[in-house]
Image (cartoon, rainbow, N blue to C red; front, side, top):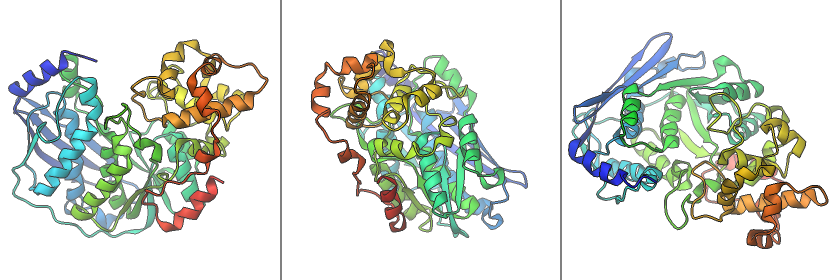
Length: 458
């Protein structure tokens, strides 16, 4: 927590009354599509983030025109701007490239507020959805829905984690024409795509750069924190679909993402992975961009424990996947963060301890230094870790499954500690099959995939 940030917040809002979405550009040639945005803080600081998209053979040339791409690029700018707005949180956002309706303004205001829930909470900034910002449309030109040429293809965003691997593999095995989509590809995502037998020309890649001016402001003490990255990925996936002529976008967000990070609040690190956001995004996309592209989460009916069970059946990926944000740049599991410990726990009921240790480098359940993180994961604190992890119930059930499998073997430190807690008394009386056989009906999964997904968890 940073108690002085609310004071900074009010001072910044007086100093910078406006954040301006000035314009954007799209340049297309045979090699790449180059996109840039221009934002400003009250005409004092200017930001020009970019996106570079190498042209691939799978692209539909007839969809590669500035007019066709304009609605998606403009909306990518609408979500991209929040990374820069949050530096000073001006009370007004001026939208100049195009006219947006009052309905759109209301939609964006909700996304900004809930998507920045963690940012406001961790910076001790007290605001409400109605008053935290005014969005003012100054543009005259209204964007119209474009007609795209589409085919039976499916965009699958791949970040190198277990969830997207499960989606990619199940859909590919069903005969779906899968096109992996990667943003700023790293070693893990490239290795997972290669292991899944997808070639370079069958993969779409976006390269996004932040303006260094933002990083300088952060170094100078301007506000910083989490933004709804998955909302940015949603709009970018739409652009990827248009470029490749894909009629569907299959996300890998599970039902577990719906649980709040802070108990009894709407503060959720994973807000833009929730069913609520998915529903809102589908409504917005169909009304203001296109009704022809189906955006849905393939794994929404499932929980993290079920996904871990499916992932365990793909041993060829176990040495390549990566979920640790701390070690992502070096493609290593740091072994000290909540994401590492959660991933270790959720996989342990399905993968042997020897195999897990070979992936993570050690038995994380035998590391006493991880006790504070462990306490957060099992629900002993008001806050879960601010990471993309499963629910408290799922973690506790997984731990009880591990203990049941160990029986007379040596009990690692964190599990021995767990046996003295009330959680052990409660959860180890539960039947794990309740979670392992559950199916969340709040989803937009196309009917043709229902039996496939249900069969995968049996």
